[in-house]
Image (cartoon, rainbow, N blue to C red; front, side):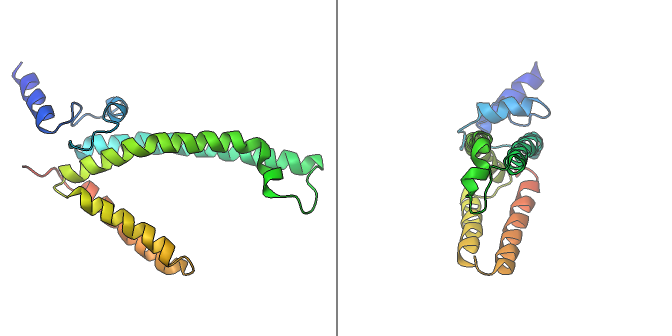
Length: 173
């Protein structure tokens, strides 16, 4: 009884009913906290969710890629693909798979953003640091678009900084 009361207090304090969950419960927590930008998420919740999301997206990407490759090979082997045909002729039938992939990624974007901001907050790092890191990454790609080496280094440094912050332990208030 005391443990349940302490857990409820911790959940209220962190503005996250699912604070600290692991395993399959993180999937429910991920969608239940869809737009919860005010709470906190500890490492366990963050990394379990990241694992499930990554596995799901890899399976989805391979499936969509297989559909695209299958369609392209079918078009090429049928002889309907003439010299000068455009990309739309090649990808025509696989557009549905690509649209589904895009829609799923858009659906996952907002809860992923909220989870990362809660993880930064739990580690004692302002959400503004996350925004700054994302903007630096985007700016490096845009500014150094003709120099992929510089863009890769900057993006790598930004990604490393994010991972280090996401690995930090919970900071006591």
